[in-house]
Amino acid sequence: MEKISVEIFGIKGRVPEESGCDGCDGGGCGDVPTMDEEASALEVFFAEEGLEEKVEVTFIDIVTEDHEMIPDVKEFMEDGYTLPLVAVGGAMRFYGGIAPNQILREINNIEKEKEEL
Image 1 (cartoon, helix red, strand yellow):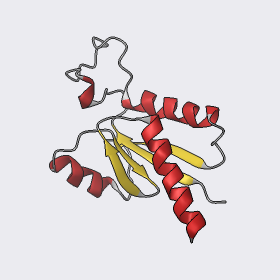
Image 2 (cartoon, one colour):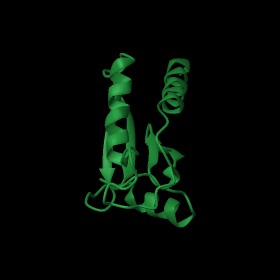
Image 3 (cartoon, helix red, strand yellow):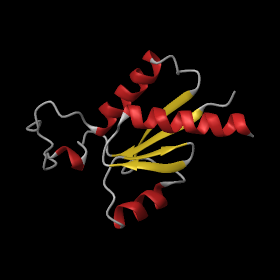
């Protein structure tokens, strides 16, 4: 079975803009997780849900990495969508943060669609 991809597009070491932090890099934002930390926590969430065989989570740093969807990410950002952007199954689905339960719901919808084919 092919895994469903969850790709998190963000900037390593930075907190999501929606967090209310002003983007400080000196740790002055308290316990607000960075985008890459949120992506790691999402992997743990899926493992705890027993989905590590069905879902593959990847964090893509839009500053340092090359990816075929980077032009799309930049276009979304120009349209006002904030990082991190989350693609599920190859399509942009969420922005501004990582919400595990919403992503899980989207994965369940994708699985249902595959079963109906």
